[in-house]
Length: 154
Image (cartoon, rainbow, N blue to C red; front, top):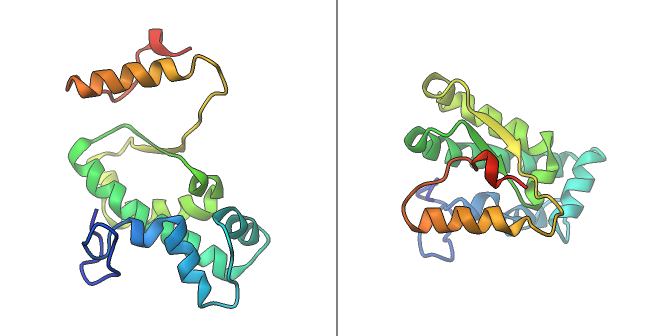
């Protein structure tokens, strides 16, 4: 998703895509020129928690960019919940504060006042792939999936 038309060239050929602004690679590249270069996203998150202002800043900005992208999608799809997963989501408030600020700036609350942003959780159960498989099948059949039915939750 293009967010900054004059931004960095993305691997897809466009400029300023979300992945050039809020991915692990983008965050590490941003810090490379600072006095706090890091080798991995978990290292950035740990340093931010310990008070490193450069790491805190790039995580907040990644959250803002992610919030802009999610606001655009949510205005079209109107979900009640958006779950953010992956390593970046483990930054908790360091990421979600920026995300929520972007949601407010983009007036998403006026269109979808009950929308919630949560950290995605994957259960460590052997049968966890079953609901995902059912959801993928329903999506492939254009049945749409916004929430798993109670019978699908292990």
